[in-house]
Amino acid sequence: QSALTQPASVSGSPGQSITISCTGTSSNVGSYNFVSWYQQHPGTAPKLMIYEGNKRPSGVSNRFSGSKSGNTASLTISGLQAQDEADYYCCSYGGSSWVFGGGTKLAVL
Amino acid sequence: QVQLVQSGSELKKPGASVKISCKASGYSFTTYAMNWVRQAPGQGLEWLGWINTNTGNPMYAQGFTGRFVFSMDTSVSTTYLQISSLQVEDTAVYYCARPLNSGGYYVGLDIWGQGTTVTVSS
Image (cartoon, rainbow over all chains, first blue to last red):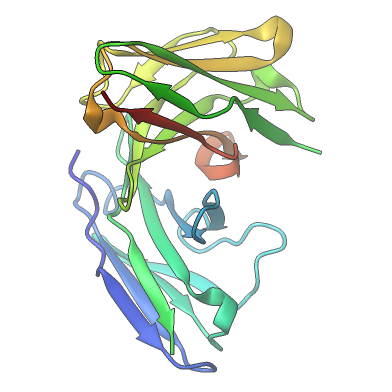
């Protein structure tokens, strides 16, 4: 499967909200409620932030939220903080495999 | 606590093979499948596939059949990724990752190993 499409970069100021989009197809994002989002700081392993489109694992701040409309999923981070600066990846189940997005670099200005 | 500990960095020449290990602890090994994900330098995450730790049956993503082999040893709660005929393009950090089970479905990857850097260079 082709990678999901994410913007290469987004930015925001502390306290603001940003949204990262993740566009797939009717074979993955559009057909399954199994979209997950990962945060990755340089030199570290990815961390699960959102699963099943809008659920947060224990310990993840409620400033992180997810949604989906058609073939596009979105991650919203509200009340931006300096430590949110990282790479973010979406991932979707596609029937018999998983596919990641290309990643989005979030800069907190 | 639940954790995955991977083997150390590897430096290999093109054409060689490498075998990476991922040791699980803190949970029942055969209860969860194990996924493998790679990240080339400066690039994004790429799903390689997964192994059913209950049956040993592997499933490979498109483009990762043939040279990539998943295996496991339940006696030591360890899964392995072997890559043969290494190419320079295989240079990457390789992660093992345990999926999150929600309502009987795997819905994301919530436990990750620390990553193993494989460098292929002549």
